[in-house]
Image (cartoon, rainbow over all chains, first blue to last red):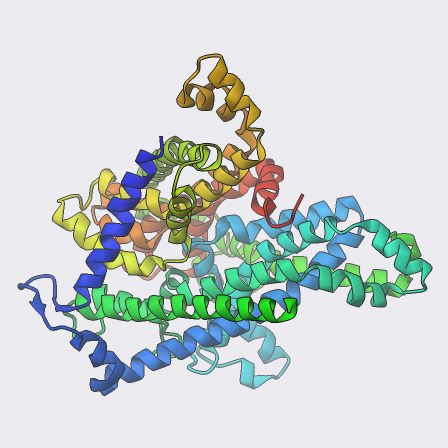
Length: 294
Length: 278
């Protein structure tokens, strides 16, 4: 009964991963015969090829910026949102919840096109900032063709699409908090603010951990949305590692010929990096727990 | 927290915050709807939410530029086939992993769910090459296989956790009555897992209905284009006005929005299950 899941997993996940690891050691454009070149693909974008190295570092930097700001934005918006939802009446809460579902079920090409237009040269965002005379945030070509504002624009879209799920998680966390804690705190004279800081926020820590991990993974892996909104432009200011790999394999980087080997090497470098990060985070947490037990 | 014990200013701040958020959250959709009913020229320049005049031209243009019935049929076929495979494979696997202890069952579960953490992009290149080598480009099978795996980790995770909450006694009782594992699964556990199956179905449908990159790499035959591919082709085959892009986009997401207004209860419950200890 487990066999179908394992079979299809081996065929479409494990085998391709092994294939891709092997591929990263070859030079192959998909047409001529692949040639074994050892670690040259890795050395290429990590050291030898200065253009590709610059591109890789820039993309990785963008991934890191996305990870930090998207995660931060989502947490900072969704906690007060969930707290507010938890205190208002049932009807209002239902209404807000319905609106939360909209970005979640529609995440895809249609909404990405909408955001492209919303942030575009004559779109509402630029128009609004022009009216307010904040010229810095009203570039003539729109946010997404501006090398400085394109990445913040993407971050805003990602926060917009990440907040709803985080809020639902926080809301379920709030609803599982024992109400008597608040009654006891109120008897001791704690006001709403004090209750929030001393009871609610600490008890939401486990949820925050989930939200942070989900958004970090989301930011590190994101490429479909960025591909559809900016495709890494303008001049690679929104390029990410995933997109770099995609464009090395199927797109425009590298003079039009596919570089499957380098594309695989790039993704493997990041995957191994993320795995190492995960393992070291676990080790640190483990060591800390040991110390606190002693 | 009783709301009447809270100061009025706090209440107003909360309601204000919620109102601002809801507007910011829903605005892109309102803007899409409004823009899709504007004339071509106005959709470039006019950012108001009430179009005047109101026209359905954009929808007519989209309907003539892409084969809409075909794209809808393809999307339904693709989503339906993926859903059928997901529902056939992962509840069964989740059942085994949750209720039938065997050596290494936790390792198998971890390996299968690890797909969640492996960036899809790692698999994209090899999968496209393998599908090509197997001569499955532009076939539903070539698209279906990778999609079923890519969509798999979340359903497996949810199903296994759901089955783990159901009492094991039912399985033992069924075994005593002579049922084998599969019989117990099909007659007892599967009917009990309808809520989890609903959540899995919804998540899978959303994922597949919206997915663009994987189909775009495997399907190039326009007769097999799903709705997202058809919408994208609108962009490459000409210079669509915002009104036309938004009209096309709404046609893609409308079925999802309508479905979710009715199913949201199940959706929310399933999405947050497991995040907090019950």
